[in-house]
Length: 269
Image 1 (cartoon, rainbow, N blue to C red):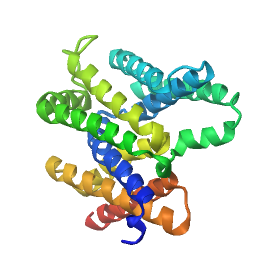
Image 2 (cartoon, one colour):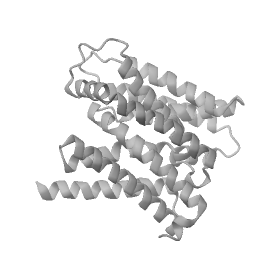
Image 3 (spheres, helix red, strand yellow):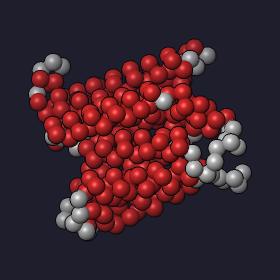
């Protein structure tokens, strides 16, 4: 295993996946507790829609992707569903479906449309450049610091959404907006190299798996990090060892760890 990780492009892919694993899985604990697991898929797809839009109209991809994602995050933070027949997930699911369709329409006009769609879904871990890694490390560190400094406000807001106690939350709530912006910025950077499906998996799988094992919130957070990072390492290793696509390999390893957590829950019960 040490020989595999001695390769420069493998180390870069591993760093990328670990950066994604740590921040996205932590944000995922809030996403899962709020019951809005579609939000990361939707924001990720909005980000890629921005990239496809920029490519189609020959504009700067990063700027447009960030702009699209921030607008999407702002609009999602305003969504309030008062009709008991509807769920927030349904609205977010519609956003995901429409943005996916628009992305495919734009990419279909590209010379290598099929390959581009594959990259949108599962990323290109082994082609990430060092400048992208440093940029991601810097932004992710800032987002992580914001989550750490204001953890009480974010935790309390998540509790209210989880309990359905949102009567005192207005149409625009600063902390709710910052929460969506944090997810949006994390996703817009991660999706460019990591792909929509791995990003979704990092946000959802580790928190759900950890919650199957324990109800203690502090222990849950620790297990979330362990599962996310372990899935990254194993995914990259098996990708290189057996010539699998990196993104799909990481998702598969996270799936294996989820099954293991389910078995632990089953045995304990």
